[in-house]
Image 1 (tube, rainbow, N blue to C red):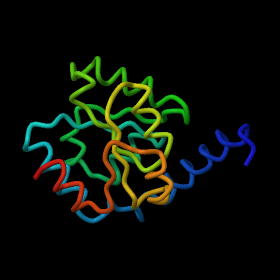
Image 2 (spheres, rainbow, N blue to C red):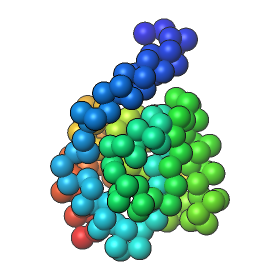
Image 3 (cartoon, one colour):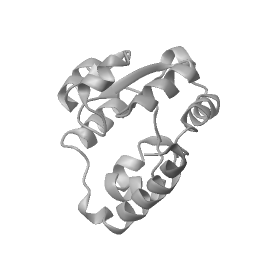
Image 4 (spheres, one colour):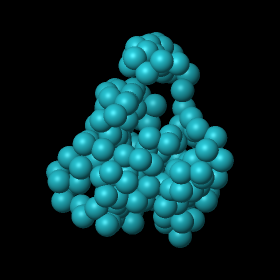
Amino acid sequence: MPLWKVPFVAARFRSLMTRQIEQIVPFPGVVDLLARLAQTGSTLAVVTSNSCTNVRRVLGKKSMGLLAACEGGVSLWGKRAKLRKLLRRTGIHPAQAIFIGDEIRDIEAARHAGIASGAVGWGFTEMDALKAHSPDMLFGSVGEMRSALVG
């Protein structure tokens, strides 16, 4: 796809997702993982090209209440700036943060923001493609992520 079309495709994707949001549910175990991370004192936030309204409708009020922030509607190349903004706003040192995503550009955004990158192999991008970009942590399942981050 030509690069100039990407923003239009992303906007169309968000529009379709908004119309069908009631059919989208979190991956099994994610809501519990968020609760466990919050219990450990971890500061949680979401940076997404989707809207925070959509994130709220999928996660629900209880899980959204665990988040320190949600930065939505982020452009395809704007995640690094949003990550830096969140670090400043929350007072978290980059060495204490990890940005977990399902795309190669999430790994790159984390690197540019000076924080660790985590990649999940059950989302947008195939596990082998993520692995080729050497994220700091690579998770094949929610259970693996839970073991690594919560213990």
